[in-house]
Length: 215
View 1 (tube, helix red, strand yellow):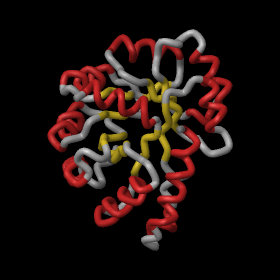
View 2: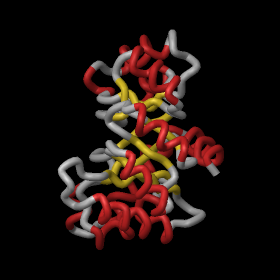
View 3: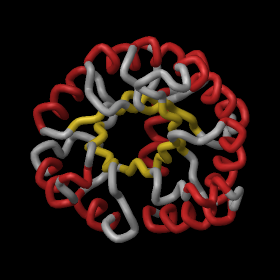
């Protein structure tokens, strides 16, 4: 199953980052993205514990059950081994973090899940890879842009690096040219006004636009 998840991430390339969306809107929002071609979604934990880790894990379980066989659900902002265990029990398939804590990477691999830690420097990326990371999340990508991504990727060509932070229709082609293996996206697809108004066609349209760009 882990290898299937890795292959799916490489194939689909776009992971939607969902943060701060009310529970009752998660399924219709995710269905709208699915209609637009999205097949990977991460639901983020809250570092301050509001909502609690258990509540987030319950929402992951809800989405994983609803989309079983159609969309892979993972967890984001994973900072602890406890969150890895909760995600595994909920049916999540991948673990994404803002940092590269070795204990989280190793717990993820031990659980049979896909590890995607966040790194910025070549040293962090190399160490995360040695610790067992399957992908590297270059975060925040927009702090330095596609030129930095390309410079890092040149000596670390063996790593599958995702661009996360500030990826848009204007710069996605530049990240593609720089060697990005995929992208984490949030606000450019998750239109807050559309979600508040249950205007799911807007979400579908935005998702479809990005899916067409990466395919």
